[in-house]
Image (tube, rainbow, N blue to C red; front, side, top):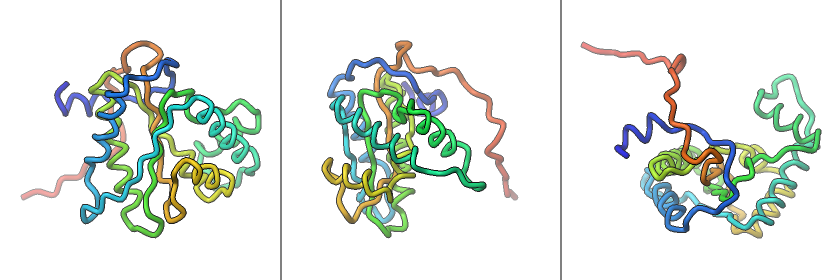
Length: 196
């Protein structure tokens, strides 16, 4: 698949087959993330790859428990409200039952932590599409980065104390076979040209 086509046809996948993708495909996706640009070529984005089903289940339970304790405030944005409400109902699986969860982290206090990780996550989503895998950006672990139980659990998975969780990526074979590549119209993201 040509690069621009992989970008323009990428869509989020929220239903996955339970089968673990081939190890080589997962490694290619991770490599795409590792080759993302970083501020000053710092290369400080840390990738934590989780494919063990019982660990994925434990993480889902810890995340649901953390969100269930939260109260919705007047300024709570809609997607966080959705996570809190679903958790309070006891049926929230934030990672869509993916067989692969790639968590990104970066150095606390590093001004480009989010930007560098965002570039890595985008590279991985584009690579996944090109490799006929589905993917979805996951924000919930970033939202819970200060939650003590979440952080303690991730220390056991390799998160360093001087790191902040910046995001995650669900990855796997889409439930319907191939990724949905139907083009969506762009009605937002305005463009302003300043020209001669």
